[in-house]
Image 1 (cartoon, rainbow, N blue to C red):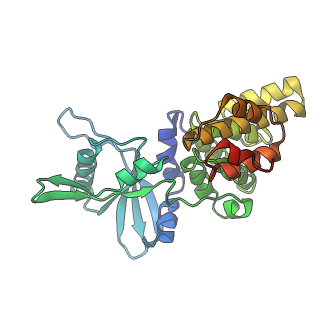
Image 2: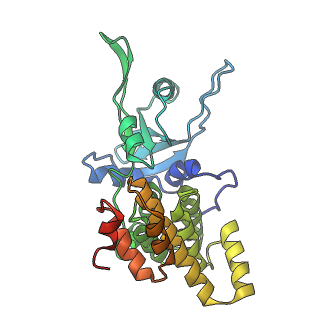
Image 3: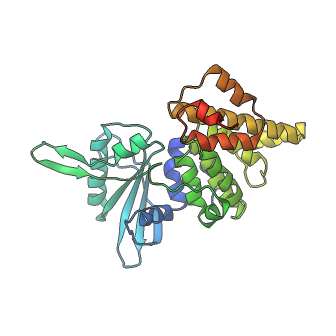
Length: 308
């Protein structure tokens, strides 16, 4: 498999590029949700440029042609969506109509998101026309934290490593993201080095600037033989200079503490300066992981520290 394209440089790119690396994620995800798309026989990547002769440029994120065993097929148009954007309704309608006219195949629009509010908005339906008679109705399929499985043990992750990577990206803002990343890091050791490289780097890009990204870089620093991103090269060089396991452990717990604070903030829980200092001062990884699990149901930091 080829290395990740240099143009892939954002979490937006990673959300849709993972379908180029393994289009089967689409059918596997929706089969578990009760929508039985047929297994692809061949998949070919098509141009994402939907511009016509007029100077208005329109581009999809990823466009795949999927051929199935029964001689049929469909087009899979993948859009990564980071926030609500009402202007997308008309763009999506244009994409679907244009693709159907150009290729003569039924297009399926898949929108992938990292937060539940955007995912539920994207699902629609989005009606275009008058209230009395909408001429078009756009109904995207959506994958996000609300329906992508949480893969947090190594055995499950190893059975479907691309889906585990996608799980890590879509759930990157959740308190349990650390467990998913740990499972993915272990599962990457079970696949071919080139595949591990691509999925590892796509995961890093997909995590963007969340605290989960710092945890992921730390996990990858423990086994960098197949992970050659800019981050991993820097960590490898630092490891050669310092040569101290203690430094890596210290960085890991600091990353866990910051991620825990981020998770609490994301849930709307007020963290006092005293509570923040206590979390940052903790140097026991097991304790931090225990607090992570409590953070998903806690109503205050008092719940977090209960029975400490």
